[in-house]
Length: 157
Ligand code: SME
Image: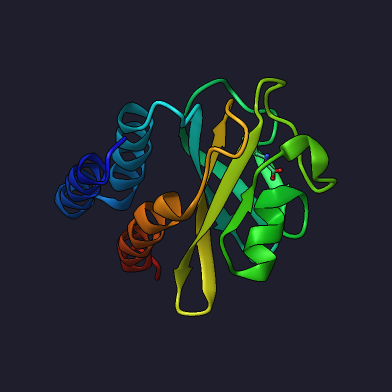
């Protein structure tokens, strides 16, 4: 995908997040647009923090995952939540933290959705292609996570 295509996709997602009637719709449209927009994204999902211990699977596109609840600190998802930083794994089978979702998955990116220093959730993307994720993916996904954080923070009590 060219940089221009990615900019168009980023703009489309940003508009969809702004126009969504509520945070749940914003999350759902984001995963659908990312999955449709980038062929290497095999599985796209969002986990949301429940309390301060568990990530619970929200909207996703792709095969159902057995990991619908992941404790912070467990898996690559839990590691990204505890480190409060994006994690890219080029070869999931070489990473002892990895919790398998599909035997076809080769690489993964997890981008936390942060409200200040608080983790609200994360964007989790798997690819069947090895080392599918790089700086262009961070540059696409981190601003999207920031926009989602604004929508999610709105609905906090
Ligand atoms: N691979 C993730 C688990 C979620 S599935 O990929 C959907 C992890 O290691 O945390």
